[in-house]
Length: 179
Image 1: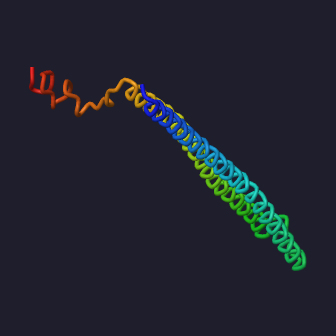
Image 2: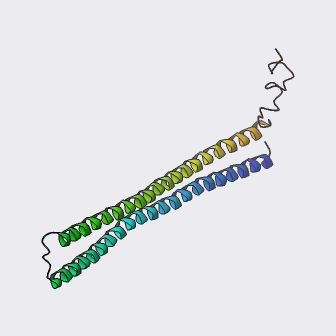
Image 3: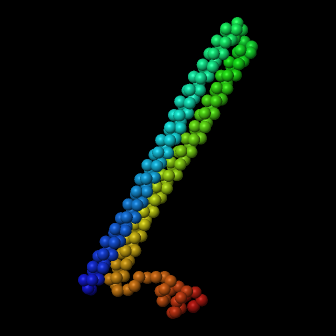
């Protein structure tokens, strides 16, 4: 075997190794980027919940101020606020505020769930990219090893579609329609 053939095999091995490493690292990079993006989505989900809590608190304080102002107006008018219309208005206002709070919580839960779902999807895509990188690296190594082995054996690489003994183009039988 000539020095040139050995050098070519060595260069092929190095090329295969570099390509395999590149595919593996690309998959790992995509996994890391997807993980960071998923973490950002999870943080947005928590923020949506916290924002809803702050909004509910602000709405409750505003409602309490409005109820206090209503009570002061009713007391200044001399109407008894323990029964009748004033009591009904106060109860209705409190009920309305509870409904607003529930809607705000529900809206935040929907938004938060959307962020958590997007985080899970992004994380899954990152895992798939890492797996694809690992498989790509593995197949590159196998292909490179096959090329090197073929060059040492002095035979061309096997190609199913042009092989003289296999497939529909067979001249020695065994192909489609050739018994």
